[in-house]
Structure formats: C-alpha cells, structure tokens
Length: 274
Image (cartoon, rainbow, N blue to C red; front, side, top):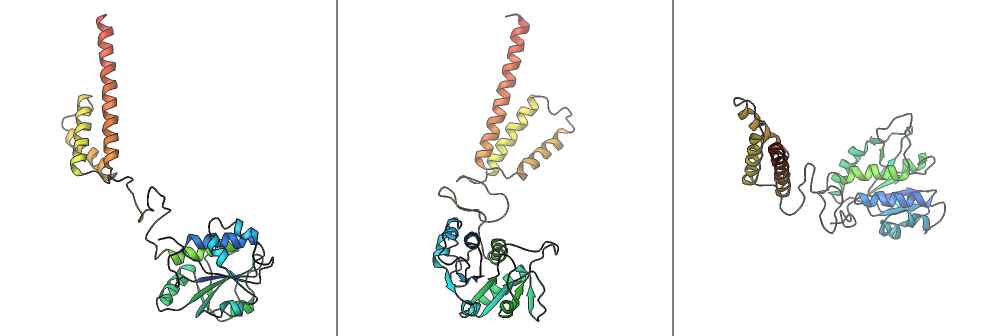
C-alpha cells in the first residue's frame, strides 16, 4: 500500500499558515508524502497559488500540491475539523494542553479511531504562528529541542509530526522496488527468494569448514578442539546465513583449500628438482 493510500480519511490534515516560499511548501508536501499524510491546506500564501517552486521541490509528492486547498483565514481552514493542534516552540501565556509529538500522535490515533477529523497548524518560516492563531487550536505541540536553538523550518516540523503519526501504524521499513518489497520490520532481512539456510545446509558448512581447518592444523590441541568447534558453530549460527551465503562461504573455503594444495604441490616439485 502506498503512502498516498494509507490512512485515507483518518490521517491528520496539514495546515500551512501564511508560508513565505513555494520551496518550503514543496518540501513540506514531500515530508507529508513520506509519512502517509495527503491533505494540505494553505492559508494566505505570500507568493500566491499555484506556485511553480512548490511543485518543483515536492519530489514526487505532486498529488499533495495539486490537491492543496487555499484559504484566506485560519478560521476558514480549520472549519471542517473536530480537533486542531498548533505547533510552536515558544511559551504563549495561555492555558492550553501541551503535548510532545509522540503524545500528540497517540492522541490523534485515539481520536481518529472515533471518527474525528484532525488538523495540525504550522506557522510562518520567520516567526511561526501568532497568538490569535494558536488560540484557535485545542492542543499545542512542542518538540523536545535545544531551548537555545529551538526553531524548525516548516518541512522539518511537518516531518517530525508526520513521523510520530505514522510510526505506530506502518508495517514496513524503507522503500520497495520493482524487484523487492520494502522490509517488514527491524532486524536482519535475508535477501532473495531462498531465505534462511536450513540446519542441514548449515551442518554441511560446519563439517566442510572443520574438516579443512583440521587438515590445515588449526586445531593444535585435541583437548581444546571440541570447545573451538562449538565456538565456531555458535558464531556462524548467530549470523543467520541464507542458503546463498552458505554456498558462497563454502566456495571460499574450497578456493582457499585449492590454493593451499597448489602451493604445497609446487613446493614439493621444486624440492625434488623436477
């Protein structure tokens, strides 16, 4: 499922208030597309709308730019929504519920599950939202940032909120391609259709490696050999080798063995004077 389709109708809308540059609208749309957000509202864009620079910097999120709705006031933009969140880094001197992006995402999911329509307001590049605009919101979202350098640009703020919204519902990591789907979760992911090696295939690798190490004189102490063999097997099993990786490993062992035998045969030939 693409991010364009994900959470259609339930994901929060993004409201950009009086954005100054088309480039920032485009990069905000790109951040929205990364995290399953598709509904953009723009209040009084300084350079008018549509904006070529916004489309050029959206990097594939053109469906968001093309579907953006423009309003003259914040009141008009928030009219369809049941709950509105305002992003700001500054104290406002008003009684408002304040949440981190993580807490806000949890609140959004709970309310979206009840059918509420949600929106998040993001302010101007230079000074954010003014107090009258923040007063229209139900909740303030403030990120845990360095108080001496707390300002985020629009795209960064959208990405931060979008990421926290999307994180609890996504089932994949990264991107998919025509040849391979996106990864389905954290941890090692084996590539290819063959999957992890079976225990029988691993045992074949162990026996091959141990035989050649024994031939090469690696196990110098018969008493220590069982411990060394056990350590080798534990070490290799932790890597969760695929069948192709087992085959590659065995090919490496065979190549090293052949090289060793060639060198030994050459030394014998030279020693005999032939």
